Image (tube, rainbow, N blue to C red; front, top):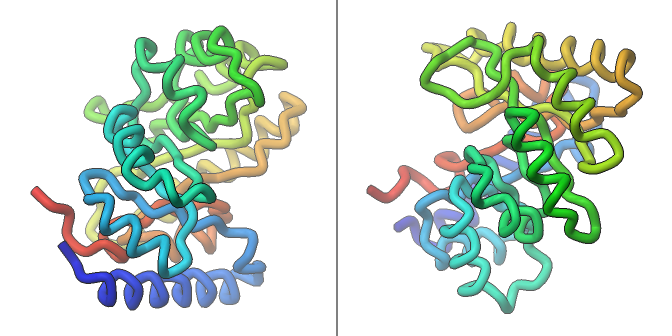
Length: 229
């Protein structure tokens, strides 16, 4: 595991890179939320990042997140995000455990979240599979409108999320980030949803994502170092 000093140092560097990318794009850095992807990271690493000022952490698995929340229960102001696939049989637990669910990818899942009915209502993003990759979850762009309809007045859909196909360079991801922004703009006009959030960009490409309008970036390796096996 990386030391507390290393995590603090890397977090500070990432914050500076977010700020520089925002400045380059003519944007306010405070409009970009930095979520640390903490899947498989031990609680001590999350605590070190929290001590450095991080408040938002993204987990891939519901049970792993709940265990870490219990271990870090003294840190009452942390916000937990579900950034991995959500199975319908985990919806009830997830609905009350996460500040934001990034991975709604079907009408069935939206309806399950609506039935969970926690208070306040679940906040969520729709995950869009822009590359048409069979290995990834996410709905095709043409399926997003149906999820918005299923969620209306039941689930707070705040925006869209995507993970572009693997690429040799950050620039190769730009067309996918631009496509997500354009899809959001079109759907916001058609649906009446604000869809203000765009969750896109990770360690290798987050600066390009910010230039294309990301409001949430999900950073793991650049802060925590290589993921434990």
